[in-house]
Length: 319
Length: 271
Image (cartoon, rainbow over all chains, first blue to last red):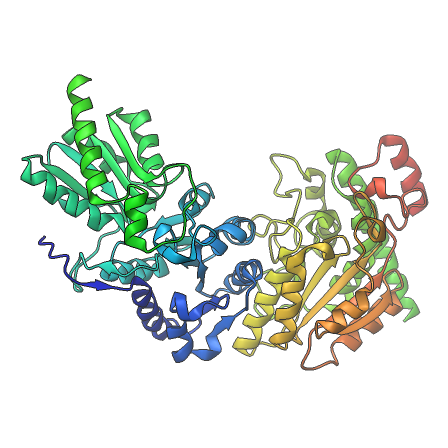
């Protein structure tokens, strides 16, 4: 694949478009939101199917349990709000009302991570993957661009049971062509490489591509893998990459605890111990600021991934 | 009516014995709040609701969500008596090999319409089910049983707001107003009064009844069906531990089962 990385789009709009198309295919599907429909883009579904859209107001807990009620009645249900309030405030409703009963509710939460920007720490959830990953029955996707977001939403709609999809507010660089044929059964290798593997998700996929391009100038061959699926994580792919390159870096716009990095570390430590380094938010809250500056301040740039790669490659030589 | 009330009373007393037996055998569970709601549940399942034990998934059936899920022994006893599963299953309550989870589980127990136990969530699930029925033009009703201690959960009031906003007149909530919660009287722990005014203010039709008078319960349920455009709540005045003199109004029996001596006395009282 060629990566121009010269155009950006809001992945939330991809969600809205996917909802409109799914709404036509699934006449009983309903969508719920908690007073953030213009931001989450569930408003695009509401415009086309007002009868099947339920804006519950600022009441996320009620939204998640109501979603369960719709699903019990056999409907495909999407429930959206900001990730802070859906994965945070309504966590227990997601666990007990939805996941425990393995109900067909797709929890699509937007404005996740530091890149929500100026709203600051109260809205910058960096714990959502961790919170959702520990819930049995839950499946988790983190798409990285417009095209993948649309495909993930349609894929989630075909699955039975609860799914969490993490979206962010910031416009995302286009990585995949619009007609790309996605296969979510396995992580997607975007760049082949032999010296180090970078597993990344969401916003950090584009940064990982830039990092690999930078490393290539130093004659370091980095494999870049789009880990769109955080749960169930593909054990075989992770182990195969570790065998092939012998050095692993993970990159995510999330706490280093409990997300992508933790998932990869769990697999490697049990199945194929390999030098690895996690790039993510260290154990601290965010602050207000424009997204690009925040990513620099929290060491979440392509340069940070490059540095991490150099470090694990050096460790590989001493093991 | 006398004949019907007598029939329901004898059915409820059978279920009361099941409640005490199964919680005693389990060595835990919540007999107090099960005994307070059993007359209402008996009236619903053996007189008022449209349902079919042979076809638990029947689309046109009335739904019931036990939002105060800790009263599971009452629901299980009734479902067994109604024929959803053998009465012998009740002995397995809370045991590893049994389908009868400590709190209602939809996946394992035929007749359970929603998994509950974490307070506040069931009423919201019922709101979703009722909204779904409205959207589909279906005629069945959705009943939700909530507790008075449960009414201290904030999300109960989120659900209350939503139900009246969506004009869910197919939703009938019943408040088991036994005035006791784990740590004491509801009005001492965290007052929910004036509870009638609260529900009225949230846009609901409010009825009250004696939750241990079958005539009263039937009248309230029938009246609830006549209201259009709003959800209805029936505030059923009840007694925790109702039916066994030494359990009545005693908070310790909220979450404690009876020992063998107490069982002998209780069974004697229930006949």
